[in-house]
Image 1 (cartoon, rainbow, N blue to C red):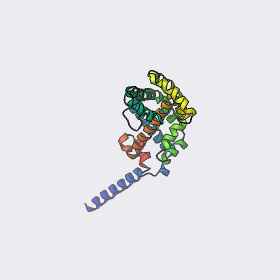
Image 2: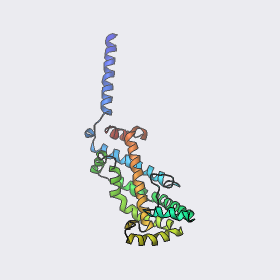
Image 3: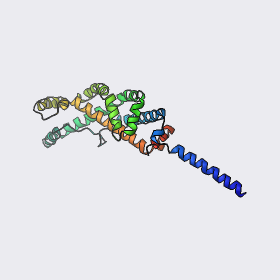
Image 4: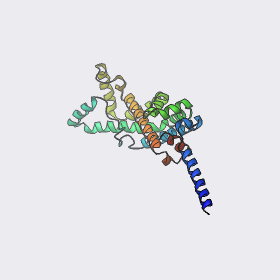
Amino acid sequence: MQRRQFQACGLAALILLATTRAQALTLGELSNADASNGVKAALEQGALAAVGLLGQSGGFLNNPKVRIPLPGYLSDAAKLMRKFGQGQRIEELETSINHAAETAVPMGKDLLVGAVRSMTVTDAKNILTGGDTSVTQFFSEKTRAPLGEKFLPVVAQATNKVGLAQQYNAFAGKAAGFGLVKKEDAAIEQYVTGKTLDGLFLVIGEQEQQLRQNPAAAGSAILKKVFGALK
């Protein structure tokens, strides 16, 4: 009886050791396919979650991390305008530019997913080992230009509905000539588009970090395997 108990305990110990070993893979032991598939799953999930969060009413406006303010010193000018009874118009413009961002973001879903699915093994391993900004860098390099082209007309249409947008462009254009406003901020459409992209990439990065920290919560075996190897 004692011998059987000893053998059973020994077998249990071997199973536990094997299970622990399987769960404790190092990054170097992951296959290229696992590393690539894990990163793709994480990034696609993170991108879709970010689009869902930001592409709804209040997604930008009610999130202090990504809410788009008036650019540069024009925020100070807005304070002065509020003193002269123009506060409502300033609020309308700020609300309009944030709603424009919320309207534009869902249009980028296909581009974001396409960038993820076409990424190389090298891209995947660079993201795994690249630190907190690696995801933002990847999406910025792969999608910033085409997303900007897609977002700009949507942003322009939304901001043009507010009369103050035209006044902003005329005023900021002159201010840019004196170096008071960045050239890329001289047109409100360009400014809002840039801030929309910044906010989108920021939230994608946050989503990916959450998956890194708690891969089990994602309910994906490949995510658990890949990101568990980084702990």
